[in-house]
Amino acid sequence: MKSLESTEPVRSLLIESDAKDAKPIVELLSEVKFNEFDIAVVSTLEDAIKKVAQEKFDLVLLNLMLSDSGGIYTLTKLVTQVSEVPIVVINAPDDTELAKKALQSGAQDYFSKTSAGSSSFFLRCLRHVLWRFQSKHSVENEKSDDQYASKMVALGKMADSIAAEIQTPISDLKKLVTQLKTQDTPSGFAPEIRESLISSSERASHQLGNIFDDLKTYSTETDRDPIVQARKRKRSFRFLVVEDESEIAEIVVDLLKRIGHSHIETACDGEDAYKKCIATIANGPRYDAVISDWIMPKLNGLELLEKLRANPFFGKVAFMMLTALGEKANVEEALDRGVTQYLIKPFSPEELRKRVERLLFQIRS
Image 1 (tube, one colour):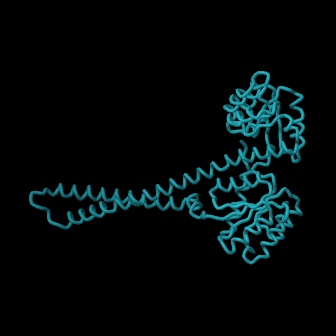
Image 2: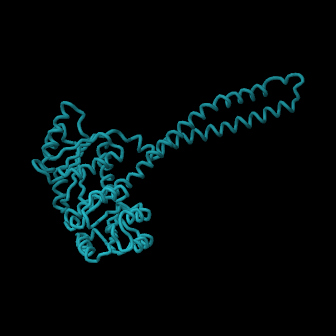
Image 3: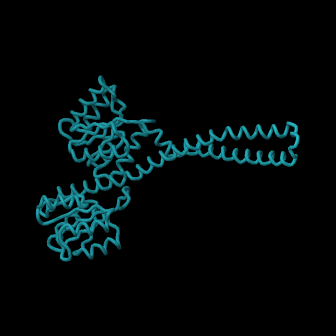
């Protein structure tokens, strides 16, 4: 799977035995603006398996009924070859049971060929599929960092604990050396044995002292580790996600949860969002950040921003605009009105994650 920061086209593989059915899908994806999709076509499962072994793809579109394979077996066989790539099934029958089996067997989505012919709906769903799949994988590093930070903190505490435990024997050895050097040798105690005890005690004390220093150094270094420090700085922020499209709202909320945030509320339009903000003045706590769509009914994102900026309680609230309005004039207008961050749809989970991190950095600053 390609890097989520990449602006390269989505490398797509269409597996379809019927050239007539393949043609409209190829034309649809080829005509999307900004060359968003780059599509290759094969007609058999055998050719598909060879293709994915030779090239990297970001998306696979699969007809279950091929000339060399049929039914769910086609999907399960392919899943073993491309587990890191989302597979979307496009099949002739609109079969609810087959769709359920496909999703249970590893497909990310299922379309009948008639629904795939609806260009705007189909493209929107494909973007959501990529979103969901990439979101799942984009947080793996976050989870790894959390696990790493936890282990480093635990190891640092263990090092501190061991260092504390060996302080006593180090002190005892030093006292023993002092006593052996300053006191008279007891009768019947050979001088060479005394010197050997002094030498071995000094050596042991020195070795334990080095271990103590290493443990304290390790404890300090683990505490200074950048990932550990980042997790220490992380506090619980409150988000309000404002989006009239429930699917987009769910994606944003899911990503925020995946990167460690739990205090998230949603609003279906600007008017609903403003009411919720006002309610927090009396009931608290107030939101740290608002993530809002621009085009919405009742009160759009820009109007919501203006009302919040005019309210003394929310004049400095962090505000991120998520919108399909990507013209330079739109961006400049939003920034002039006081938007903190601006992100153009469609965007990847990684892009959103990075913008959220910037937003939080600005809040902390």
